[in-house]
Length: 221
Image (cartoon, rainbow, N blue to C red):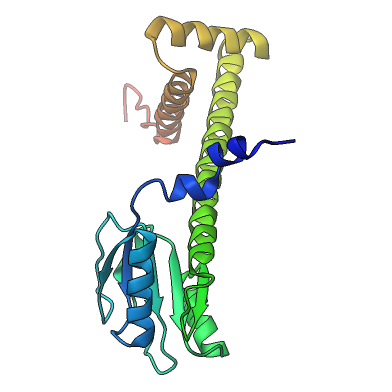
């Protein structure tokens, strides 16, 4: 059985709340907005309140609460295009228009008015936790894509070596690896240089082959 002490040490909630969260509250100063402002302050967040939503936000913002009004025009928030912090929408209506707008913006959580203290902290923690998981997954996918790209480059480099000096796949790889160690470069860079050189040579010889030959004149016309 996992002890309570172990659970606390590995608590996701504790790790998220370990530092003061910078929260941007994009809500009118109405009852719901002021309730959120008060409750977030009690949780220990550093809160900045602003309305209407600005086109730019500070890079230090950890979480955004955004009020979505039913008659609100579609706004092209500039900060949505630059990896924004997670967003929790605040709305008093649950209709298709509001939900579609929330999906367009990329909202990760929703609060419905009237806003209450109950459920606020849990919504925040769930959204921030999901954002962390999303970022970790994005990094993992990026690494896998990079690894796959490097694999293809190395395979193409090996094929060039095998054609040039008639060696098998293992020998071609060992030659590339030896060259990489000698130059103190990643083997992917050696493969890229081979691919580039092969491309240049191919274009050069192709250009000469396509060049029209001059007419050979005899000694007399």
